Length: 197
Image 1 (cartoon, rainbow, N blue to C red):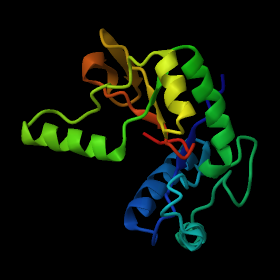
Image 2: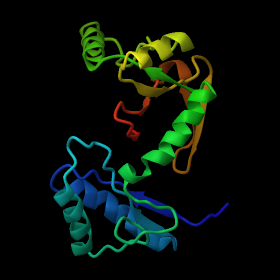
Image 3: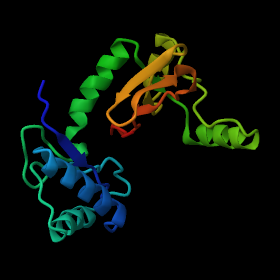
Image 4: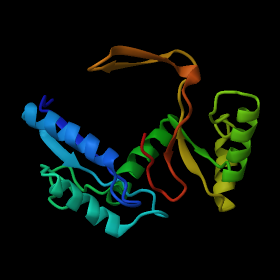
């Protein structure tokens, strides 16, 4: 495994470039340069309803205006491309299908309206927000029936209900999370686009 530093920014082209993009870009660019690594740009264009092609161009121009250069990106290519998330959907779909087949993910047919009402209920009771895992226990027959009916679905990660998840962070060291408090995050939206966390 390579030990070369690889850092990236992943701006969403949904409007005008903003200072947050510049801040993270500058921080990561300096870190990459200081450590002889690569600074990469990946365009986070999975929100297709708000995607703005002009914004994508402006982000790249803005970063160049700041004097930043990058090793890989949508305009340069590179061996880990494509560098637009929308062009990588097939790659993510392959992994989502693998997680589904291994039982590590599941299809969620909950409507936006149901999820909104769930959030409102949780807020009104001062409960922590999160998905109630309603679709987690659907049988394969129930899933197939809903698909046959043309119901839209997202794909959620099946987080273990017990135990802890451990992350070894370079800055903070070993961090433990109680699995019971981790939400079953959406991995793939109903339009087939991946989410980012």
